[in-house]
Image (tube, rainbow, N blue to C red):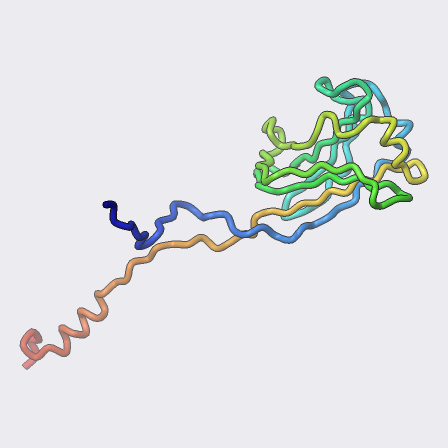
Length: 182
């Protein structure tokens, strides 16, 4: 018969990830979307915006990327900062007249590598069909919502053992047998 095993204490190496932050949302507007290039592999990049101390951009490929199916638009969220970050993200496109109608991409916690690392972006090569996206324009503008949340930064936990030297010295001073003062 096996005895039950109890964990006396956990030992952590490094700083464990903290709880996730609240969602932060940024709207990215691609004006005159219909007139953007439809050449396969040609990206249109948004200006940088800040979130969680990092700089971000959205890259949209109106003609799709090399891996995209014919007629599909690719959308990617890119970390433009020199440090990597773990974050959850959503890319949401809401119809301008029917907010319940939306195109949605959500993913689990991902590591966005440092800029130019080759692993700085996440998204989808087949986000939506271009003809469908054209019905989502509001006065010619395609508005994409970027939702982000990241691990809350916690203070690193450190182990500092107690140092009994002060108590030992005081005990020595107060000990008549050990002291040499006469």
